[in-house]
Length: 394
Image 1 (cartoon, rainbow, N blue to C red):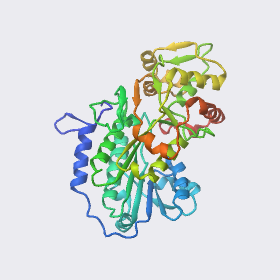
Image 2: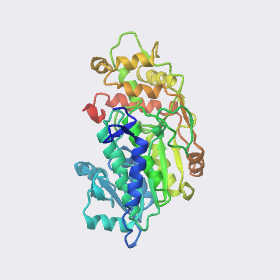
Image 3: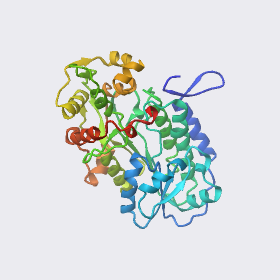
Image 4: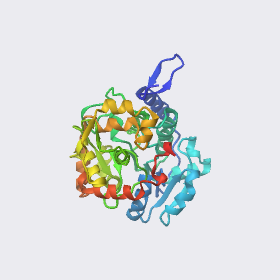
């Protein structure tokens, strides 16, 4: 099954992510629940807590909205961790976005919908190696269930949906914030299902007031380097930690840009979009407008990690074939072949909308060389801690 297909039809033909999403969006709209009588629209709901982005965004929302009722929808298995991290005054609500009515009883669901003012939908599977079934259930079906809640909320002022810049899939060249379905294919199921979910969101925007945020590859805090897991660009660091003798490899030619953004920039940008009325109805690329070339990213990380520079280049195609073999992946500390495509993919992201909204808030994305030292320092302090390995490796 290819990454750009997410469901099999009864006639045996594969249904594309776009077809599934459009059909799913039609079902969602045609069966939209009747809006409930309005109560006090004082509630902000955030999904995905205590995940990486939600865990950092929630305290900022609490500070910005001290008088609002703030509710965090949390998977039951994560409740203990959520209680440790939740700011004072935040209500934790055990639920599951993959279930109808978010896994809530009817009374709780109706009361929540009746009081909703804002929804921030962050819950998703953020994993390049995720399988099709799990990715679709969480990213696509979960988003449809959140949209159903939004549609039932009479006082809803805004739905803030966190997508990804990589809904662009295998597109090359310049990608506009206004664009989505351009016939693209995808590198993995993470991309294809996030695309499918954004199709659903866009299909409801005439009815549900929405802002869409598309972050690039998110790394640790630009000041402390703190992150939640070592994937994405961290695979470069993990590969460097192998005992490969005098050979210090650069993966691919690295002549294209690699767009990474620190987590503190992303959450501040979402917060700015929540404050800014002009962000309504817009899609914002939360990316580095002047990204660093992939070869320079690898060189900077290597210099920070061990004071050296790459001295050999391994073709991206050869490297990807090598990494298909488990012994090679183990030698390079679990680096998946899928990650190499982000080091060698020629794509650029337009930031017209983001510049307008973030400029009004005085925000700019830090340059990679500015925060790479903090990123590497945190990695060195925790590189042997299994808690930072991606979930599929544990």
